[in-house]
Image (cartoon, rainbow, N blue to C red; front, side):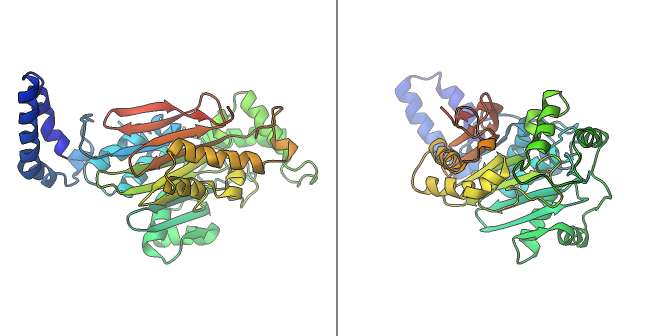
Length: 390
């Protein structure tokens, strides 16, 4: 919080001769830490008026950084802030880092225009919205998750309740729903919106989901129908697999992460991807860093890529290099022709979002031109993801 007390001082010092400014700034800094800074820290208790105040992007003393998939910079659900803005704002006001991140992704989960997360997420093959989520708190060394959860708009909150109120890491299906109801969450009969239901009906018109396909065809026909809907403008390309992952580090150096999704569009009922699985859709080590993903869950699960990335960070790798190691492993493990493009690269979407203990971050993608969201002392923005198959 000291950064707030130094802004005016730094501005004034710039008008002094260099030797005088250096000496004066040193004195101001020491006194600010001992007095003014301490007073400011005492005012950082979270209040509703603070959380709803306008954003003021002022350089701060710590390395407060929030990163997420690009949808964390797009959706506001009618409010004043995006996911990364809300998470940054709450964390800077002193709220717990994981609580801040979950409040951020709740904006996306509740936005009915986001067809890959939460309320209004694209349903499974039976037209039922099933949601997956997990969260990890680096400082507390605990995690929780839910999978195939029906009827609750904010599965990230239920995942946190699993971590806080049970001795388990993962609850699924009807058991997860019963737990959510017992914990006081509202359980609805149907989480479809008019848009998600129209998309499902169009998919059902294009492919008969009542029969399992010939093993030689695998999921080719169902995926062909999905891709044809993308080509015809029914579904945004990012929503076929869509998800939101959001990771953050606060000024105390505490790390956390959360991933939440409605999963693969029109999936077989009961299918669970990587998002709620620790080490796949998300992994956080409070002493090292955090990594999460969006994209084809089956490929990510095979290599437990988020765990691999964090272990690479532990060895001293930069976030970009750590994620590239995971991408190379995915390419090496992908051998079925149906999953390869003409150049021999995986033909599916996969992105990683990585944040280390020093506040360095990176986004890596298989989709040229993709970007990821960042919010730090310089404000919210999108940054370019590094392309994996260079």
